[in-house]
Image 1 (cartoon, rainbow, N blue to C red):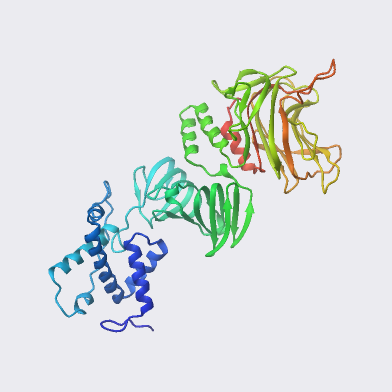
Image 2 (cartoon, rainbow, N blue to C red):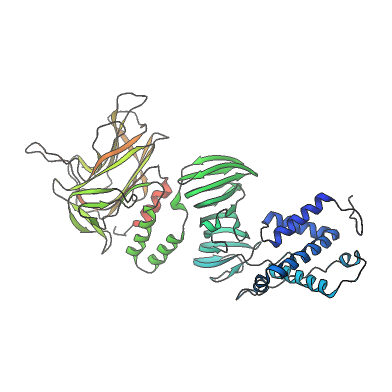
Length: 542
């Protein structure tokens, strides 16, 4: 068994160097949680280490006295409201004084006192740790154990269990973290935390770059970004990057580098790419929205959700029908693009004061262009049909007749339909259509309804949703039930099959009713995301 050597025995150079490094990093405020644990273990286990620490602490105090007197005065003055109790002071080892075989001058003892004060001020292991974050806000929070309240300061190492509700933590380095219950977490320093269970969303400014979240499955290291983390059952975890970039480590080794609108799941040490779910992680805007809903202002709540939707990493077209610039309806997902309004009348939307466009005449509707091709697409719209005409009632209709083109419509029997001009391996493209059974009443207004369709190019599947719920669909015409990317809407119309001259006596396929929001996404949104879109926009009219 190893026995400790005291007095003038020769010290291990490696241990001594490591101890000095850890001590220096501590007093320079650069030590991380793992290094703090290591230093604490060294000092508890070795009297020689304690002596070396006090010697180095004296030098740090002397340098501080020479060059950082003002900082020192600020450091030894606790922040206003900081009443955290100190733990027991570890006695100063006698080996420091005895080994020198001489009496210390008064100045040396003053420097030692400065070292003690610095250790006290910095919250070393001898004392309770200094707070590193504050609880800024909470909504309907229920805590397991001592409840936290807005304004409370949070210390590293304290485990917190949030049974339900949502909280906002402001880290001292600048990161802002929204945690949703049920969750269990602890802070490790002023720029890192450990998520044991539950989910969070972090927004990280440049000053806090490197903000770190550790879960049982992985460690996420920010590179200037906004991201969501989930610590799930069985030690699994998910990382969803909403904006910017994040490095992912698992089992101490680099695992991946994720960018905006990318996500990864880690289970049993194995990483897998998954569909990103930005809406599954509540941020500060979602907290604002929930407060407005609870306060009885659904329109203001929707506007907050709409702003967030415009910044969704996969949104490529977002029309809210709130205002037009001349005859152009602004695409809120792309400031340089928009939809041309050919005809229609302003209408009242889902709430009083919310705009919409009423389409009734044969030449009413909008036209837009969306460059590029997509592996997957999601189409969503809030509509209020007045009358279902026989055949197709167009919502979004591609105009190029080229491979990958998409048409999306309600049809006369009350169902939701989608057509894809799909080809495989260079074969001749052919239309593949997917229809649901009746969803809408054939007589009387159904009120506002939420229609959504997901085209997943990786699986070759099409899924329809009505008011946030998936509904069965079948392929029409006996063709294959799979579709093949890429998909495109390079030139398309809304509410009308086409804007062109028709033969006398003919009427174009068109939608008759009102539209007050339409969004296209360049990815296949999961079912949970569709449900959340419905919940955030539901006017409760049915």
